[in-house]
Image (cartoon, rainbow, N blue to C red):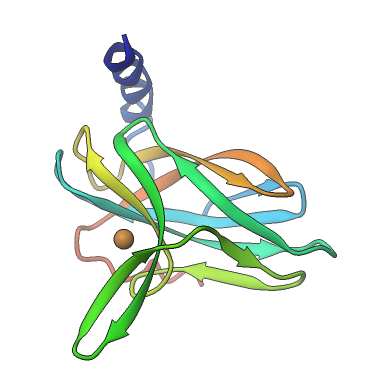
Length: 155
Ligand SMILES: [Cu+2]
């Protein structure tokens, strides 16, 4: 039952494929979500979602979870240098102070997509639900960039 539901959502996601990788932004309450993107990846691997979070409100807010139908699990991660290696660690939340913009980007905070149930192909869009403590829930789409992309040049 669950896998059928998942497949249905995935079909809808892939139908949105092949749009140009233009900047695209979303809003939830006072929180702006700036150009969500990810890298092309094969099924059964892992992926990472990147985006900007701009808190235009007067209160602090935090990203507390994310979900997508195309991964078995989703975690919020930080990445820090530990000697010669970069290590990822799950974090409980990603805080955004009033007036602040926090960038989730390669080498830093990211949304870890664990166990992809389908490939993410360059040019496609992948649905992602973000949940904020104050701003609530918002549905966005990750634009799938090339496998080795370091950024999109939009920020
Ligand atoms: Cu990670």
